[in-house]
Picture 1 (cartoon, chains in turn green, orange):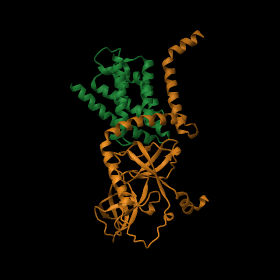
Picture 2 (cartoon, helix red, strand yellow):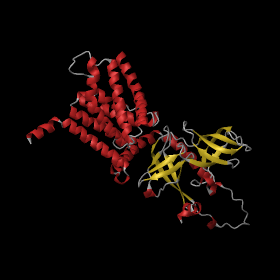
Picture 3 (cartoon, helix red, strand yellow):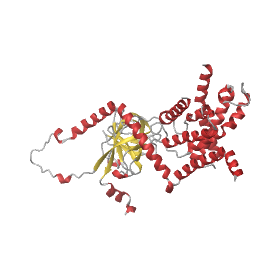
Picture 4 (cartoon, helix red, strand yellow):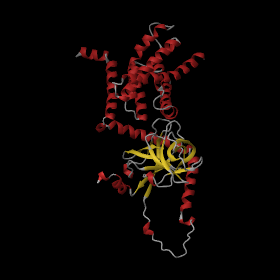
Length: 165
Length: 275
């Protein structure tokens, strides 16, 4: 049952990304990539093997629908792979069991920190592969920073709204 | 062997990560290198099918508006029929029909993907080289000019619309005949700009802009838009016009690709190096 719900959420995030965020709201240069949010909030409950496979499927779905040829798949798998390290770095201040750092039980500040760094690293790999010109490092860094800030604002609003509930 | 298997088992996550990344990077590289773009054609096919499905749904929602647009187009065409014309010829002249040669033909196509809020907008239509579509062919819609074909695959074509700043076509004032280049300044998908209209012209808000013979890839007389306002250019000799475009790029479904049957002949004159 839970698995079905998770698949439903993943499909919904893909649909929102492709048919709404990419299509109607924003221009090419500043586009929030919110479809990776389930990598933080849902995939952590699955075994490592499935985390990577699902992350690949998630990114590849966006690539197929957007004709972006593998850049989202590569960036999302990268994010899923480094997620345990990120969670360990940001999870030291949790209130509960110190042995199991957990996205959902972290304090809000640490969770936001994890989200921002995660978004930035994902966008960095994404734009790097997209432009394929690693020599323009400054522009790449700048574009990743602006876009991840833009994505982060949406997630921040959602987190604050969630925290108030 | 046993140790090797244990090692494999221990590092299976790392190996899976490397495998998935390798697949993704191969996908990126093969799409970027022209001769090996197999992945690309597969995703274009999938994207085309999904866009078709999405488009079917959207068409259903937009039926009322499209019907109104088609009815309007029918009305205009009906007015051009011989039945609608009064022949003021009292038997003194000879009518020689062979004087009239068909110059333009129109291929109906469906828009299956379009963008109108991006910096460089484009459309994908469901007709390609198999239907005779070639780059540089004009594309018009029921309300007016849409854009120009930029590239074609066998079943689809990519169209650069008027709301893409890489496209510039000649636009003429219907009332006076003065003309200038139409080029989209960006920002608003409803508004474009025509420059170099002489200061002594009597252009005013509400005047219609159409294609003329200079537009080359379009038949003359196709509506482009209506003048919204005029401002004097920095050189003080010409007006720059803000134009409300006829075509609603946020709601575009049916278009026609314009085939110029005399295009090849014109090309030999305009570009003698081809010969």
